[in-house]
Length: 248
Image 1 (spheres, rainbow, N blue to C red):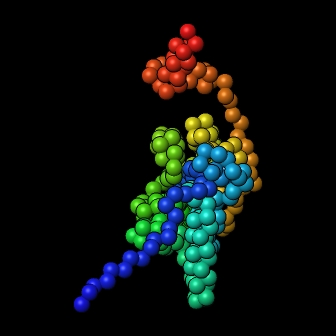
Image 2: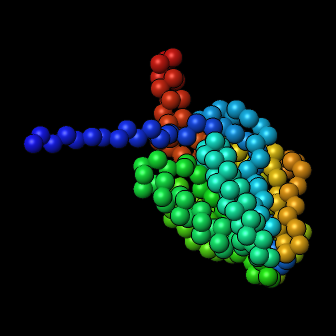
Image 3: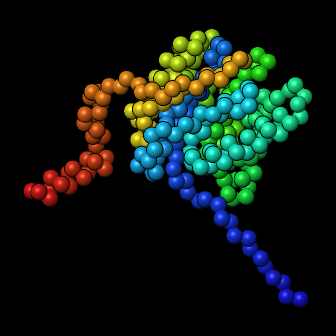
């Protein structure tokens, strides 16, 4: 008997389209602080300037996302269903941040195994019964919990600052200053970052997301004036040299 092979066409997205950049989050004395800018980029072109990437989840959790904006919206739909199902039980209990984070790790890993990943890196933080929780999960389900986390370029540029300056007893004001320092460095170095951000706070009592605002910046540093100083062999140096040789 002739065997027939059937192949199921995978129709997932192989490249992200409109994306958001880094999210940075820390534990502080009373809860969790999280920061993200509001840019939505189409490649390296800024397409949207008011994309909110920090969202409350249920009573005890706060979610931040970098990556594909439409996939983030799909994840929010999944979480709405999860919280609704939890509320239907009406058992005077509700999902905490640890449970929501665990759910997200399974969602991301499941989609990765179907070769149809959700193109996001997620940060989930919250407070329940006095216990602070902060974790992240990548687009392929890699996850961990820590006192401070970041996505995107934040892993390389913000976390070294956090390792040096974060401590257990940070006040709200000091925590905000530390996050603003990280976001300012990212603004200087990340080409897709924009100077319009929000900072969210979650405590045992409530979730608060700030109105959008901009940071004070200074672009007069000498390193910003001549990008090829001390960088012989850079593409810009080679192009400049080629142009001079051609003109001669």
